[in-house]
Length: 217
Image (cartoon, rainbow, N blue to C red; front, side, top):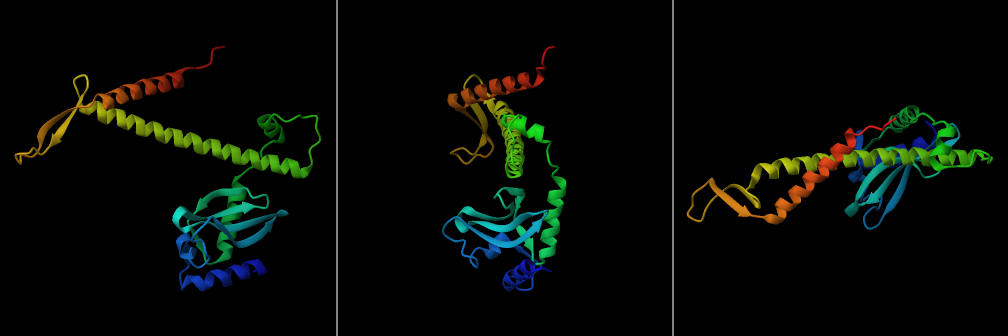
């Protein structure tokens, strides 16, 4: 165990109380993440000449998390909510993350940013562009996932409101009436909701139509 790992064990051990795993909220008060955005480095290791920090980030009222970042400040992998009191466990997780991420071809990175291939880039610039490329791809993938989730919610909205639609501008359901009867049929005139339903259906038709289109030769 190197000095950094020994320091990690000493720092984390005092808060562990015999537990083998700590969650992010266990360290909020102890490390002062209570009023403003804060970052506390818990562990630093060097791998292939690059330093990586295991940080606790955020603050109490806005959420806290653990993350690995490289010496350029770019995250490695996703944020996570718990850590082991054994630093070797966290180091192994980092190495697994690094092994998963293949270094992209430099030509692909240049095309992505529109860089001039005739220019001579330093090793530091190349490493920085590659990291920006990986971060950009990760952000695009996350945005695509969020968009897919939004579409699922929109489809659910359309399905449920369509089932409740009554006539041209109403929605219906069941409820209790003023005379104490339960499961009474209730119809409301709600043209605004029906208009939103129609707009949502048109939007989904456009999305589905665009997905079915294929490039022509």
